[in-house]
Image (cartoon, rainbow over all chains, first blue to last red; front, top):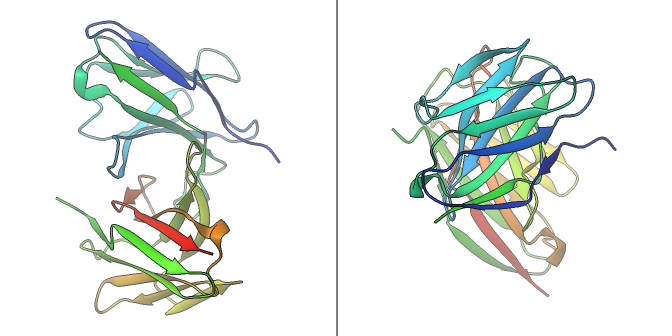
Length: 115
Length: 112
């Protein structure tokens, strides 16, 4: 069964450093998402992406964040200057269609620890 | 603003018992209500979902009950098994949008 993959599984970085989280969505999916989950809290939407453009973004997704689909398979989330409060599990998801009726498939997540 | 409220935060159930998790929402424009199941170290996986035009949806041991007037929906797990031990998230979204608003999660433990 196709699945969303994410690398690395755990990233440790110093405050102020840039990090890039990588995702490989399911191959025939067209819509991509990033969510985050601070330890013990709910999953929060960050951004959605389609056709090389951001479709929707939340208040969390400020100028420190950017997304990119650098090639035909990868989807990345960049945090330019990490803060302590960026420590969280980051989930990538993908869906076949731009509709909330279509299942979003989640990857296993990248745990980001900012020291 | 907390769009979706979920309770309880944690739940312990004996094997064979019924697990019930409740969610309430604020935005009447929501029209898609999925439940996600998350095991440790894994991403959330869709368990079951409902639209507000029906009051109940059943898939195997899992049932969603939906009360549109009360703006509430719940997940019932019948004959709970130790393998059901996981964190469960309710969510809601608007048809024309693609952002899911998640609840805070319920940690379910099924005791053998």
